[in-house]
Length: 137
Length: 137
Image (cartoon, rainbow over all chains, first blue to last red; front, top):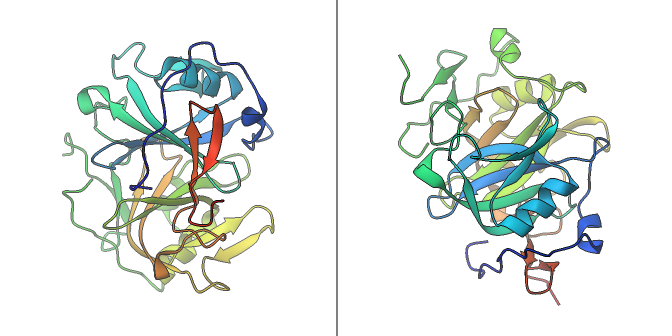
């Protein structure tokens, strides 16, 4: 994964094609998408795309997801400014998960203001999820 | 993420508790799980857990998933030997994705024999997914 050249550049006039059918869309027409930060390799978040979201991401060069709660396309950072510039896109062996390598604007991916959404850590001694965020008590 | 101490050790006699309800299980009672390799920080695979799979993972200290195709608990590596020793477990801000930090036995996570399942790379010049696996033609 780390040895390959990035081969991603946006294609503004990209049209749907057989490459879109290489993705295994679930019964809702969605695929889970992992966003990983280039450089640090930190996992920032997990979100979902439908066909339009993937097409828009490839056209724009920034992450566009499908929000299941609001049921619409979501250009990540359109309100917060915390956009994700796509550097590389990968698909897994059975086509049912997408991996985005991104540059995270301002280093903040989470709506809580955290770098990564994964700030809850399992603590065996406490048998509990412990908040490891900057703002933890 | 990289600054914290790992706080994971297996708890053989762990029982279900409120910590299990902190996870946002989907309508099938499942949660997506990202497996990331400790050290390299490579993303190895994405799979699913139900409550029993998470409980077994925490008890055993090795990744146990729920296979949707076979509809059963799947102790990863039980046939291939490519087990995943859990070093850390994280949950995201809305509880609907789990992140496992693992030591991957033999460095092979994918059923194809690849290190990572994410060996298909988007190539903008070709507008296609290109096979970046070791065995690519």
